[in-house]
Image (cartoon, rainbow, N blue to C red; front, side):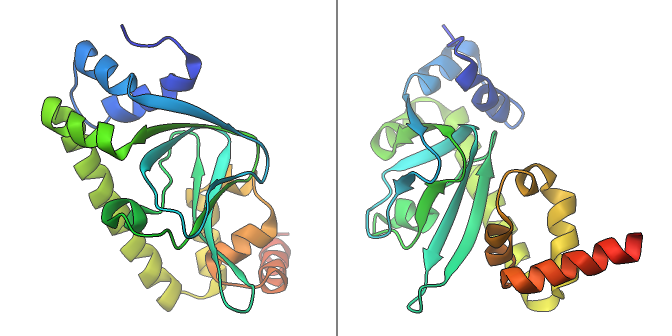
Length: 200
């Protein structure tokens, strides 16, 4: 029976909008997940640990980030309700993570262990198809983000961020958005003031 826990509703929607899967297969998939409750700023994955789980954000907001040798933080990814968040390189290669994953606000995460997921790939073809599409989409999004970061001025990158991720902007501090966009908080603040001035 498909779990009636509200925490699973975003995951069920996420799967069914992408692949056809019957109730029995979906139930088998969902039963392999475990819930992790995180407090604000709590770390889910530490740099240096190996990522052994695929992680789905049911409630709240998380971010993936790294710290350079000078102590500067760079946000790689945000994850809000309905999104997946991970150090995918660590997960796929089973090598130490290069990123931290942290809860920006109190959050609920559903995670499935790599071994359980690999077993399900052979048992439920729809699950394997689902993750193949998700990983393909993640690669395309990463390449698109990299190209935009190299070619667009900050103002354009920020306006695109606001257009695509309005829900994120309302949940996270400005310095995290600045680090995601590859800017200092002061530079982003100046850009935001110019945008607001131009529209007033």
